[in-house]
Length: 275
Ligand SMILES: O=C(O)c1cc(=O)[nH]c(=O)n1[C@@H]1O[C@H](COP(=O)(O)O)[C@@H](O)[C@H]1O
Image 1 (spheres, rainbow, N blue to C red):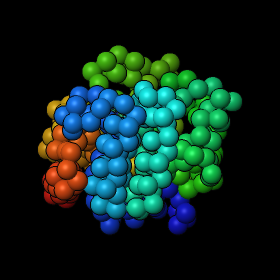
Image 2: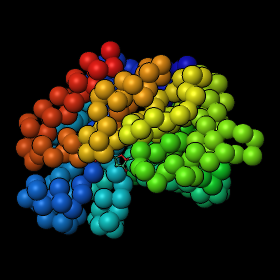
Image 3: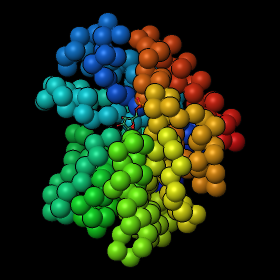
């Protein structure tokens, strides 16, 4: 593993600041609760508060792109500033864009989220493998070259995911397991460029024993998963487990101090529960 690699950068961040990944999801009802307008300016204020509360405090922050995209170019401008400010503060940013397309188009998405000099450049991006894992190749290559990462959806936290993800491929393993296996093969260079998304809301039924990369586990809090569930579900694959929570922390806003305290409390609970 090189010092420049995503796996190395992430391990260092987690060692210094814990493994919790806090989401920035400016849902319209949260804007209301924070006394902010449902406009790009409201999202900007929301994001500034989050940057102040989480930047340099937690290892990883995951802005959910949809809540910015909803306001068009003004929303994207807020997202650009938010991502840059968090990275400037030393927090790793996983942009939750869930991109996935045919290879030639995937290359453009990869440039947008992982390319040096792109206005939206992030440390990692979430991607969907459901156009075929191989279609992600341009993003895999660029991430490897730039020391950035991908989080590939394998077994999602939502109840609707199972029908597709648990169905069996022609070769035998489930669709979700075939994604895990492809990620294991890609990570053989030791850089752990490929992470997986595996929800914390139920048993995943996957064999993760050969997977050494990061596992982003959403579902903690608002979707019902507890720290105890994380410990049970991810027994044996906890080294780079990054539990994600968004609304459960964000509901503590709008003051910076309350928001930061909520994030650090969940972070500490997670550290204790997974020790
Ligand atoms: O890729 C994701 O981050 C993701 C995958 C998944 O399986 N489930 C899931 O909830 N997420 C995201 O994780 C966040 C969860 O938010 P809360 O339910 O508020 O904690 C949202 O931004 C979701 O889009």
